[in-house]
Structure formats: structure tokens, C-alpha cells
Length: 327
Image (cartoon, rainbow, N blue to C red; front, side, top):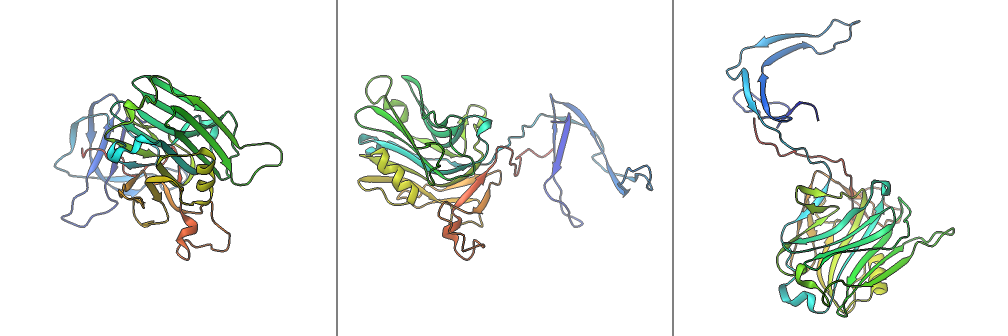
């Protein structure tokens, strides 16, 4: 970032209205502010040259500056998700999503992440395929499929914690390749005592297309996501992957959350069709109304059939309102 960076909250204003100026000074310190009427903003030496006229201003002069962070990357914030409610963890827990990754070289990227006070569960994708990371008071355990996924192609990924104390992870391409096998499943016993679910109980929050870190969102995902879902109950990984591929209900499972990105596409709201209504908010302007894995190619405007445009495209360098304090 430049030593002094700033922006305004609007492009224009009428007489009597207010424009707020947001300024960030790297490492802090003072800065000088002034206003000028720009007659010509073209610095080309072959042209008329840059010309401005100073304008008197009551706030002209030096001001105390502060460093304000610029957090890039689009994601969805779901602030309150309680995995303890209704005994959800008694029979198992599963995360699933349909993804269309675009930049796997960027490293491991979170697709669906729940974070609580004592633990977290993350389903994501990286250079070595899908991964699942479970953090509890017993420690951190990461499981990877070890099979690279094709970029710009649809895949279903899922992870399951079963009542027997095992962690399962799987990935399923929607269109199998002829030259190599991308479908993969892995399983491992949970570390710690039994299910070691102490870190997954109680109040927490979900992030879609990112993980929550101490300094804010991190591990931003690049690509499209459709149908991120959370289930509880007796769950089989193969059945979950198959159901996720078609967007079908999962027999014998309780739906905790099922976000439908084909709804409310004119807003920043990510609607949850599950029983608890765990709606989220899009942060940093991810691209909505994107073709989903069910797009047939016969509709080229999302308004004609929103159900075929139920994906959101996320980027790790997206930015919306930086949210800086007014200077």
C-alpha cells in the first residue's frame, strides 16, 4: 500500500451535502490536506499540461493520520451458527459444497468453515485436492485426498465426522476425465478421546469462501461455489457426494443449513433454506448470478431461470467498501 491512501464515500454531492474522506497513513503520522479545482488533469508534456486552482477550505492543513487496513478477498459471513442446538452432533456432522476452482496454485483455500471459541472445522481445496481441517482442544488434524482437481470444472467435495470417531473426506468430479481418476476418498481416526467434539460445540460462526483468522478472514477461495450445506445425523460419505452432485436431499440426515445462491441475487444476502434460516452476508462484492453446475446452456440470462445461476464467484483480491473510519 502507498504511504498515504484515501478514498471518498461518494463520487459527487450537491451544495450543502457532505462527502466523507477516508485516509490511511502507513505506520501512522500526520498528513496534509487541501482542495483544488482541477482545470486539466492530463500531465502529458505534449498536451496543455496539468493545471489546478487552489480552493479555500476550513480544514486545510495538517491532520493526525492512522493506519487503516485494506482486507481484500470476497466471502460470506454467517455470524451465528450453534452446532450444539438440538443435539446436532450426537449422530454425526457433515460439510458439503459444489465447487469450480480457478486458482489452485494459490495454496489451500477454505470453502466452508465453522469457527467457535474452542475449535473449528474447515472444508477446502488446494493443490493436493480437497482437504478437511479439524481443530479441537486435542489438537489440529488435517486430512487431504492427495488428488489434484481440474480447474474450471465442477466437483463435489464433502467431509464427515461419524459417531464411531472417524473423519472422512471425499471429492467427486461431475464429469470424469478420461486420462486420470479424480474421484478420491480418505478416512482417519479422530485424534484425542473418541469424537473429541469439545471444540465444535456451542456458539460459533460460518465463513463461506474463507476461514476466520485472528486478524480477520484468511485462506480466501478463488472460483465458484454452489449449494454449500451442513448436515447432521448418520451420514455416508459416498451418498453425501452423490446427493451434493445433484443438489438432492440427503436421506436420513438433518439439514442444518443449505444456502441457495439463486435467491436474493440482487442483494448482499445469502439465503439459507434450512430450518434455522442461517442467512449470510456477502463481503467485498463477490460476483453473483453465475452459472451453476446445473446450467444446461439453454438460458443465457439469469432472470429467465435463476435456478441455473445458483453459484457465486469469489476472488482473493475482490474489494468492496473498505470500511475505514472517516478522516
